[in-house]
Image (tube, rainbow, N blue to C red; front, side):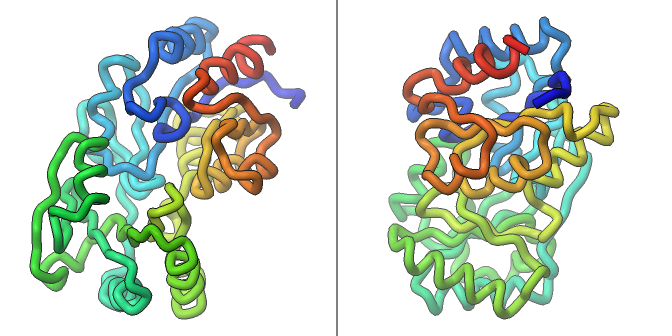
Length: 268
């Protein structure tokens, strides 16, 4: 890396926060030190924007917040700045693919989250993380337009991979389908990916992509690694994600974010 870093973009789950989902004091201090050094700080996540509001105050966020892997970008007052939705005519087919592979579908539309079974353990886990409850529907027909994200949920990683391949075979570049967790397959508009978030922030703040650093832990973070000048993978990331990054830090259980800031950002 030869360019001075002027903007840091961080993933949330598995990266900025430990398993309890609460930023540590060292993490908050690292974010403040980044800004004190004149470096812009921003976040992106597969979470819905509504599921990120609990981070706005502790991190003192003033920059755009990119949820749904970039499918919806809001300001800290939760006004929508940009939204990229899945084409309406492929939503039903996508849900059908997931059902055929015995992968549970969820729908995110606007700021709402729709599920068929609110008692599903994965639903309860996600509700705790995002701090809001889904709306229960018998089917998704009435909420199949203007969909920001479809999530396929399964503990069977092979089933998720088959569903992902089916979608790319059927739709090609009309969708983006990546794993945000080993049990989640995130399906979005093809322009709703974290690489696009890098480009958005680059344009908004006039910072060349070569002067942007990114840090993350999952497959859906690779797109922003590929666009940024400096990419850092968490120690808890899988090997292929680590192999896509310039640097590797420790895990999110061992202050990996703060260590990365100290070692790779503030030391420049």
